Amino acid sequence: MIPPVADERENLLAYLAEQRKGIRTTAHGLTDEQARLRPIPSSALSVGGLIKHVTVMERTWMGTVLGQPRTMSESAYRDDFTVGPDESLQSLLDQYAEAATETETMIVGIADLGQPVPVPKGVPWFPSDVDAWSVRWVLAHLIEEVARHAGHADILREAIDGATMYELVAAADGWPETDWLKPWRPATVTD
Image 1 (spheres, rainbow, N blue to C red):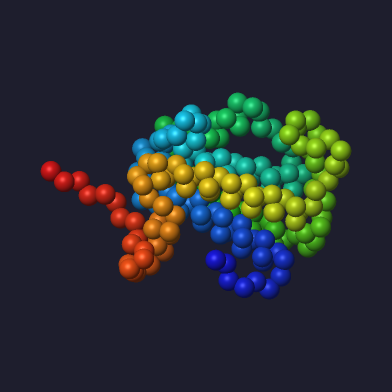
Image 2: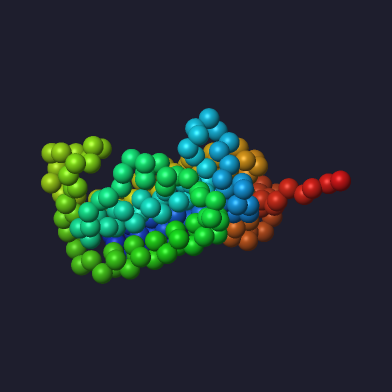
């Protein structure tokens, strides 16, 4: 849980950081090969692919806040769920951390979270009857998107090796073992 916050900006950034941590934690202890696995019927979803997608998505939204044109094609959208052969899980996590830093730096520099963010035209899933969102709206939408994909990643991770959220958080954060919670540990190979 996030600690108490002083204001709206800190609140939105803290909740976004918490959702980012959730999706990053689903990758804790995975190998590059496991991060590429697609263990459910959807042929598009892997833990690594979801981390890559949320990175691209966050940078795209921050570009929208800055007024940069959206250039994402349908094939590029599909590609941002695919971990390339030259991409490691660590490189994807590093890129996501960089995107988070970029976002936080940008948002701290915006004086008014009510600042209008023009709705890009010609994007089929964007409303045609809305002229602008606000920076506040964009941050809330990022929280929603990352939370949704963190839930997908939870399901994928459990399908890969049975690990669940609490035991992964306990392992990633170094919690001690208790009667009710044992931190995740990699399976041991026996001869």
